[in-house]
Image (cartoon, rainbow, N blue to C red; front, top):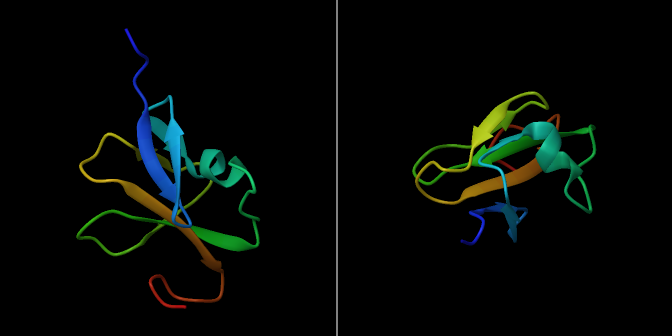
Length: 80
């Protein structure tokens, strides 16, 4: 039986995880990586972007595809 994987996006690039729960640190570590000088957010369909700290857990089994993105720490979520 095939191993289950979960799809998610980082900066509009598709990725797959073999674990259902990922942390902010896990997402930051995916090459090319997101520096600690930037804030990490997750956008789930129908909801505004939510700040994800390194030790925050995100369940990839929620409905929809989780979309992670980074912004300068000085900006507001959802605004460039």
